[in-house]
Image (tube, rainbow, N blue to C red; front, side, top):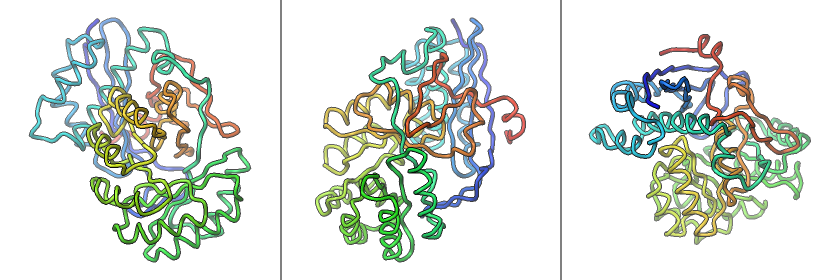
Length: 365
């Protein structure tokens, strides 16, 4: 079997809910880069990557100009060698960022072909350890919402069956953050896990001072409190407060995860296959975390089937994030949450194919 053609589609999909906000972003749409690999055996592989804000055109250029010439004519089952060849093909344009985002989309498409050849969904090809996956909700708790909106949303999620919800932090005055956490904790009660996410906005001194105060409200973790490359500061914070530290959303290599783990700078590993070089590197990070007896909770599940399937095959995964429910219907055969858990897909593949009418309606490149 050989790859005979490479196609890319860049789409911008508007959110159906109101604009969402955290300490770094205001989001009213999500960009998706879909990579399509056609083979001479009639099997087509679909991969994708995504971004809050415009910027994926650079990843599309990397796929078209750098990777496509290295893909055509290759056996897609030689996935690891193909990814390595692409990764080292032009180091002058960078090892992370747009080039890696594009390469991860290619890697997902190669995995998709492998799953379809085997006639299995990804989780069965990897080897399952569970037949359903617990979800937690981060599709609310936005920074611009009032306290009343936060309470209303959190209680609605609990009524739907979620027993874990997340709240954004990073207001100019951290006292407001603490008041919002206290209000939500009081509303949902002690039996629901409450996570917090700063999106990298705090300096170390602020993280220590206000991280200690979060202990008063039984916060399950403090996510991305500081600059994601500062391993030393995260290690100092971890020694200074009792709230577990979660990182991974903006960590891009297995080597960086290794350094966080060895420094004792992380308690919850939030590896994201779309930020790494795809599924193979995600599995390597999961193995590092498991060897250190750390739980793995994949980052934002924009495409639910990807991380849900990885979770179903990885014992150390506690739960998977549920987000962007308002655009879940853009995918072929989407999955959702019922009573706080994801059912697992049964069709062969990775599950990253955007529906053709959505591509036609939202395509920008």
